[in-house]
Image (tube, rainbow, N blue to C red; front, side, top):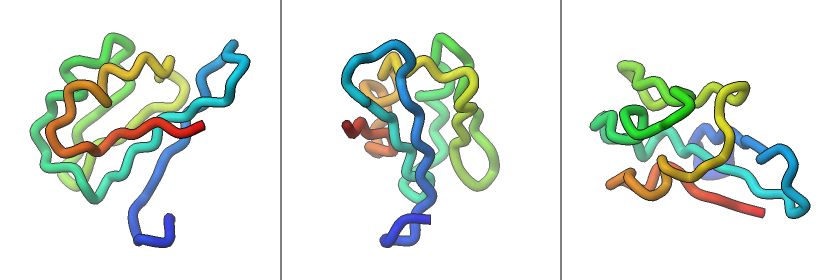
Length: 77
């Protein structure tokens, strides 16, 4: 749990020289499902409460960041 009360998932991109992570701030999710539809790895699942990221499937491509209208997904690193 982050200081602002939101859940965050960190996904490191394997093979990258620079540590990069995708953070999913679940409480921002509006439930549209666009990010899960656009994920080529099928790493995102829309649940009744929020969007869930499977860290074992996510390759850090960033499609979710590009398409999310609610800015649920962010990069850090």
